[in-house]
Each structure stands twice: as structure tokens, then as C-alpha cells.
Length: 400
Image 1 (tube, rainbow, N blue to C red):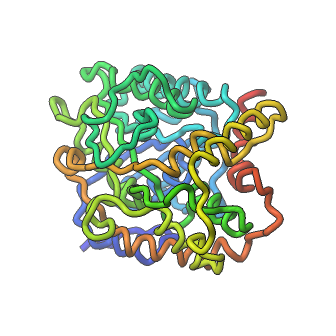
Image 2 (image 1 turned 90 degrees about the vertical axis):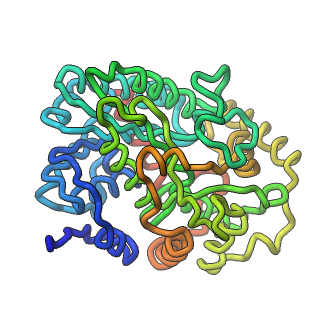
């Protein structure tokens, strides 16, 4: 039996998932754009763990000190908006996993268009010119959000692209890039888009750190009733879905030119495909020794949306980034969960790490690794330092 290579920063569950599965083969030469981000870094590692001989990671920032230094991995610091850079890293690739994106609501607006749309066009053009036959794009369910609840819908039941109006520049530019990708001539390149929902896991540098900082500063309360239904996706489950999507890209396959969502599926509480967001989130706060938010008064939605409007006006006037904005209030109070049967049927997807085990391990990881570095003097209205650092690097490099 061949011994499985394991990334040194893996958690116990990640190692168990890497070694227990009889996974299909992966391409010999792989390219991952956005390869030092939370998802991208783990995808690079999992491709090596599953037998890739060469994985090239392209990102605007260097890999963290904890990144796997392995001879099968090449980390390239470069700009996805530079076509020549993209061409250079894509040479000889069997598949490109396009993860690079300006994510979330906190970037300067012009950056979304450059990275999410123009960057995707660069990947398509590079692959066409170099003869790379497969692209798997990391997408987002927010490209289909209209403001209405998404309460257990399939991809086909959600609004179809393009929308008449998008809720934020991130969603709009991701949708623009995805449309271009999925409309690519399949005789030249086989493409597919796969999205997670609310990715979590060890080394998360965006979702949980920002909420933990707010809770640690005593500035977070339950939004509305706090009973909105949400689905989560462990980072390894998402990367597993991205890898399976490449295997599904064969001529005439159902997956070609389609959009899929993968989550923790029926490993969510009580065999459903959702959880109660604020109750699950509170577990992480209590794990870190913070006061349970359920012991505090809830903030009514009408008040939150009013405050969000004021914050957006102040942000526009002062150039300040506020956590409280319309989009954040909306997504933290609406139902957001999906029926993933299409990914199960077409991609052969099923979670490799169950939600309860994955969430419990994630809570403990943050208690042991994040909490010792937590400072209560963080800005009460801004975003986490780690998030802001990457935004500053990206904005600076792309405006030179």
C-alpha cells in the first residue's frame, strides 16, 4: 500500500480524511490560483496528498510560514491581473483551479473588477493559448442572492445568472467571471464552477476570526431572533468537491458548463442540511471563554438595517471600513442553505469530514492557536488585522 503524504500542519481529522478514502487520481500537473488563501492553501496540499507530481500556487502574497514546503509544490508570488504572469504559471498544466478572488465586502471597489472579472478572463485566455483543457472555478452562492431567503433550494431553483441587480460588487464581479468561464467553448476547454457555503476549519483567516474578535470585544449580539438556518462547509469538504469536479470534466459530461454547491450536507445536525447559525456560532465564543451571546438582548432587524445605512453613509464620507453594513446584516439574518443533490449525483460528492467532528475540532483549534494572540484593543468597527493586511497588500500592488 502506497504511503500517503500528509501536510505537516494538518489536524487529526484532516489526516484521517486524507488516509481513509480511496480517492480517484488527480492530474500530474496542477495550477491553483489564489493558492495561499485559506481554501487555496488546503487545495494545494490535498492535491499533493492525492498524488499530484507538481502543484503551482499563484497568489499576490507569499505563502505563510506554516505552508507546506514540499518539492512537489511551487509557490509563485504574482498578480492574477497580469496576463503574462498567468500564462507563465499555466504552462504545461493538466488543470487550473481558479480560486483567486477579492473576497468579501471590504475591498476597494475597483479591485473586485480587476481580480474577479479581469483575472478570470486572463485564466481563460492563458488556457486557450496554452492548450490547457480544464478549468475548475471557485464560485460563490452570493452570485445568486437577491435578498430573499434561500431555504433549501437546489442550484436550478435559485435565480439564474445574470441577475438584474447584485447585492455587492464581490457577487457581481464573481458572477461576471463565472458567466465568461461557463460559456467557454467546450471543444477548447472544459469548465465547471463549484461553490461552498460558509467555509470553516483550522487556519480560517476571515469568517471565524472576524466574528470572534467582535465577540471578544463584547460588541457582538444576536441579530434578530437568531434562528436563521445556514449550512457550513468544512474546508476539506470544499477542496474535495473541487478535486472531484476536475474528474467530472469529460466530453459530454453533465458537469461541463455547470454551477454546483457543496456543503457538509446531511452531516449537519439531526441529518438535515442546515444548522441554526447563531446557536452554532455561540459554541465557538463560549469555547474561547467569551460571554455567551444568548445571555445578551437580541438586536431587532429594523434597528440593524437602520444602523447599517448610517454606517455606510459614514464609511462613504470618511473612507472607513465598517463591519456593520447592509449586506452583512442581510446575510446574518436570512436563511441560507442548499440542497446539494446535484453535486452528489453529478460529481459523486459526499463530505469526507462530518460537521460535528469538524466544528468541534475547529473550535478547539481557535482556542489553542487564535485566542493567545487576541488583543482586546482591536478596532471595534473595522475588520480583523489579518484580513486588513491582505487587503492592503492587494490594493497597493494593483494600483502601482
